[in-house]
Length: 443
Image (tube, rainbow, N blue to C red; front, side, top):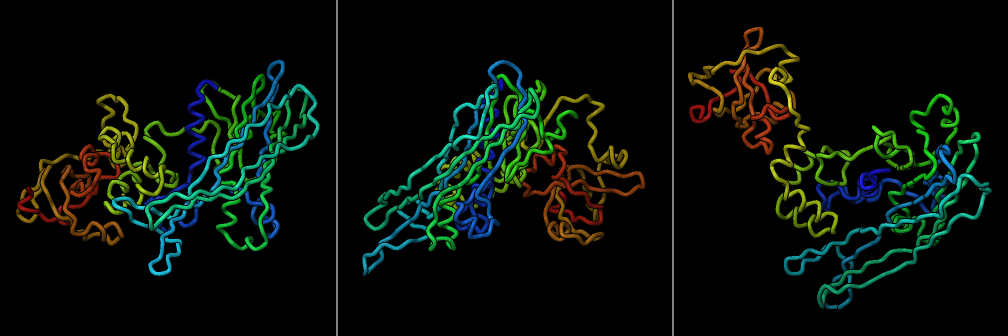
């Protein structure tokens, strides 16, 4: 793979997808359920749930020998949840009690689930030698806890539980040059019987955002999404559990030496958007919309997010530091076009509208740049109810093929107002001349 940095960006996006969601506050209901992707639960808990919750994750893929001494390097990565608790001394008794948050000076301390990144690299797997089933690779991360005083009346308590797991490898020949490789991850962490009904206790013993990275030398992986006809049957027989492997690298160069097996379904050769300034942890949202939402958060909301943890702080500072150019890039990719191509998209759809100098509204001449108040009459949808009474700037006055006059309006309080004045989609609204009222004589 020529560009390892591109793999790192994709892996980081997968690792922290859903880590924290807008509005990025511990008090938000959206953030009460954490680490929702790629969970591999302890076997004790899985058995207690009669297999409803998985204790294993399995990747199977096809790899083809391309030269002498072919081999595959395998890495497993996941997040280990860790509690950060705020304890405050109670008046009278002097005992410490767990609290959601505590203010000290201008800093806010909050009870929260942090995480520790875990990375296990296995010995390189040789494909030119017999690979009988061997002992799985066993890993162990010990429990730990630490106290950090805030002041004489409060302290932070960080704790994480023991994690035990194993990774088993298997290789099965498909033909003389192609093998099926299996990577099976199992969570062997013991769970006390009394903790089997405690979801917080279970989460602390769970592998979260679990994924596998495979890199081949002297060999190449075969796409399971688009295998060549000769390998279609072998690809269909690969059994992947809780994860799906895709090729990663340069699609134009057809790089096939790296595979990412992720709990989030991806296509071959996924890419992070070059326009995005950084992860927002919330792939269900569009960067532009989510960025504008973050910018409208109150000072108190931003303070809560800023003091949540380092991931939230960096995300907020990056968003607040975006330039106008950064924001414009989020709205879409701008490319050089010829003058004949510079026709608004809606004109291609609805036919050519005629631009007018202005229109008479309630005995007031309204033209481009004037201000009006929206008063919808012809429809009754939710958007009209929301826009009723809003003040807008006239971006254009147009007459359609049937002679009706429409005003293209950009909301005065739209954070993306500049984009609307550039005729970008999503920031203009169209109303007829009898659905607006002049404001201050139009100006």
